[in-house]
Amino acid sequence: MTVRFSHQWRTGVYISPEGDGDLRRVRIRVELRRDPLTRRGGRVAHFQGFHLRRPDLSAEVAASRAHCPFCPERVLVVTPRLEPCVDGAFRVVEGESILFPNISPYDRRSAVVVLSQAHFLAPEDIRPRHLVDGLRAAQRYLGAPGALRRRDFGLVTWNYMPLAGATQVHPHLQVFATDRPGRLLEEEVAASLRHLRRFGRPYWEELVETEFQLQERWVGRGRHTVWLTPFVSRSVVSDLMVVFPGKARLSDLSVGDLEEFGRGLSAALQQLAAEGVMSFNLALYPAREGSLDPAVSLHARLSPRIYFNPAIGGSDSTVWQHLLDEPFMVRSPERLAESLRPAVSDALSEG
Ligand SMILES: [Zn+2]
Image 1 (cartoon, rainbow, N blue to C red):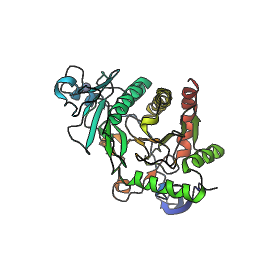
Image 2 (image 1 turned 90 degrees about the horizontal axis):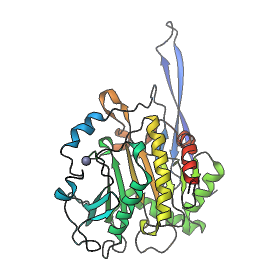
Image 3 (image 1 turned 30 degrees about the horizontal axis):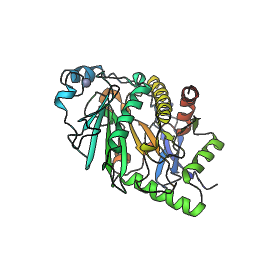
Image 4 (image 1 turned 180 degrees about the vertical axis):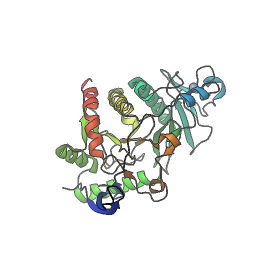
């Protein structure tokens, strides 16, 4: 097997304070994992007494409504216009989605896509059309002449809700073109190229094949997409990954690809919301512009964000993720796959 899921166990021991003075030795097992592509570490560690609880965001939603720059009465007045324009227009409009430049750019080309007229969409209200229209607007922006240079990456990301880093409650994506996409994607690209040279087959093809055989993290497959949970997830409740076999970039996706992605994602968000997840980060990871080899398949990662302790607003970004770059999972990817499988498989078979 060329895709290896390597892991080790460690055991922590302590003496429980419970019982009638009777000391009790407790052993807790911790699993240390390595990502099969990048070899980055992560661990599955128990978190005693942890339960997902849906946070109440009604105060944040109400407080942000009156001055929201993305609501329909304000968005065309206060948001900036594109320079150069795309298809002769100052903003890109697809259905309810509106794309315009980011006033805080991350790179040479940096835009925001507002996804809905509604100020707030709960995760279970995010429909496939929101995603399809938003991603079509991103395709038009990145597909404009000169938007992407050779060796650039065309990135689409989403911080949904303040806990995930959003500065506005109103749902919106970020789109940008850059030759510096961050260390994680750079490592994935380099490792994917090494894998192709060494084994003669793309890593992403072998990952899909291996995960299908194992079934442990397999969520489902549609005509255009494969859904699984990454062996080393970044979310404490584990991530969902979508692979687009044979596709390298956002520009390669047809409307059929986007619709299937939208259906699966909408179903996954409904299931996650039912469990209490009200926040997430999402990123689409493409191949570099100009690369002709099939080493990297376009893939997406949806990473739920939660409050460890909603009562005190306790964030899930701890020193482990933030300063040690060693994510830990209190719910395993295998358990997340089990919980998402029925709803996502149903949504994928509707096409
Ligand atoms: Zn709004």
